[in-house]
Image (cartoon, rainbow, N blue to C red; front, side, top):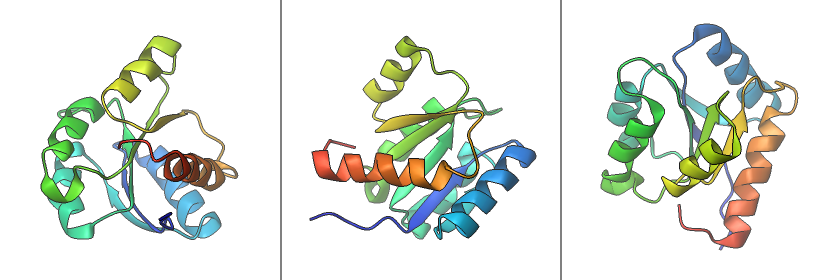
Length: 134
């Protein structure tokens, strides 16, 4: 019952990083993207967009990625949507904490724009194959 990844909600407050990732994910990866500039915006838009996956920055002003994930998990339409955090905070204990909070994986920043789409797809496919809880 493996699902194809096509729709992604991407949450990133930093304009330069957001622009590079958006190009990498749409032009190279061919994904449909709903780009949000804050956790609050993602909470408002994601239930209507119904993404297959949420890519979520950790460090954002206001509602950070961890708090955004907690709120998203409480929204019925998004409770089971897989989340991958994108962050520079990738020490082992930090990655483990993100996974304990419900993220399926973490993509370290800075990321390589040429391989970002493949990395997202690989993590998505592994999650689908393993049937891990979201």
